[in-house]
Length: 183
Image (cartoon, rainbow, N blue to C red; front, side, top):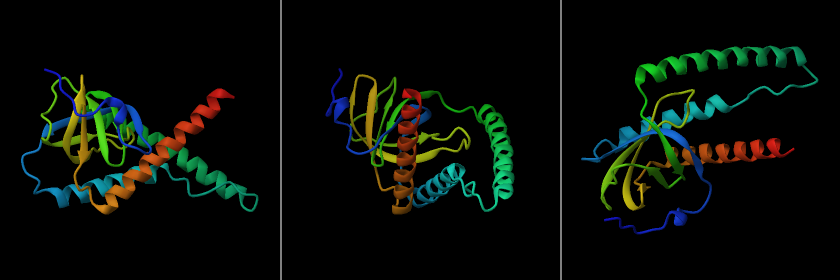
């Protein structure tokens, strides 16, 4: 009996992160861990965002210094890549599923659809270089076929802003990649 409140096309407004990402969800029993989840998500998002930052731009004033920093960044990125591969195997990440993530809601593919109105906790690994999940408390709002949709409960102001920043950066990278591939 497939019922749904919303069509897949009515998914929020604003920027989206669309990808196949490791995701696990479960019906949440109690919301008493909300403050700890907010802090954990904030910390995870800060680390993920910091991995993307480039602090030193190449400049005419000190090209040797800029080159040295770039060389060190390359080595650190290689180490991060290797460590994350080892961790991903040891942690046994959940299956990567098609996901649409906005700053306020999430839609994911699932074989078993949670009941509308159910409180759920969605664990999603948004960064392969840092295999630590965001733990997003949400309420199921609808489904269509195998796509479940949930609206986030209170993520906390800081975590909400960082999630918006992450989605914006992802969107900007997609635009840049599209431009590069079309030239």
